[in-house]
Image (cartoon, one colour):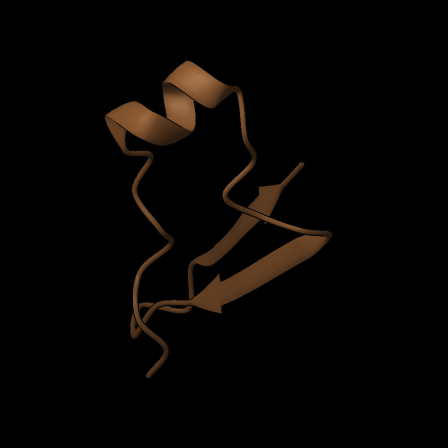
Length: 38
């Protein structure tokens, strides 16, 4: 299983940076599809 999506830090928020490049996909054990896009 892949680790969870990166959590936005205070520095990331202050510098207005993205945590994701493109689309990151996760599928849970309950077959729930999670998408993180920027």
